[in-house]
Amino acid sequence: TLVAAVLGVLISLFAYDRFVLAPRAAALAAQAAQAEKVNLDAARSEARAIADDLDASVKRSVGDAQQAMAAQATEADRRRLAADALVRMSMFRVAMTEYYQSNGQWPTEAGQAGLEPPRAYAGGAVTGIAIGEQGTVLATLDGTFSPASRIRFTPRANASGMIDWRCVVEGSDELRRYLLACKD
Image (tube, rainbow, N blue to C red; front, side, top):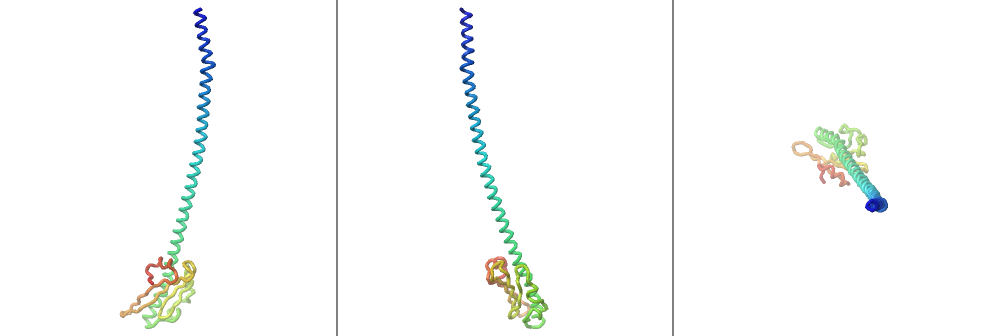
């Protein structure tokens, strides 16, 4: 009877292990695998959303940087064009000053001061440079700054024979901002 009882207990333990514990462990493993799969899917989805947000943010940043760089390039180009106009006008100022100091009067046309025709000085934003009354030098600019933008240099002879030039920007606040030495 003892052997039968021990054999019965062993068979019961084997049956309990085989039919109760093993299926329970398999079910827990399946639940863990399912939970892990669900978590992996959720993690992948969340990672994609984060990557998409990051890509969009990078694209916005790059776009903003490109716009800022383009604005800076435009600003630098406009400053260069304004400075170029002053350089082109400086030839007129020198020739006009020399003519006045030699002749005691202002020339009425560019040729009298040894200059080429006004259109010969066109370039950059300058469409032409002309001599006006009393030695005034006037540069007309294209529509880069505004349709009616001009730079005017007006001479004034002082008692010592030196010529002071007054610079005025006409028709463009933007051009005035680039040429701070030119006052109204």
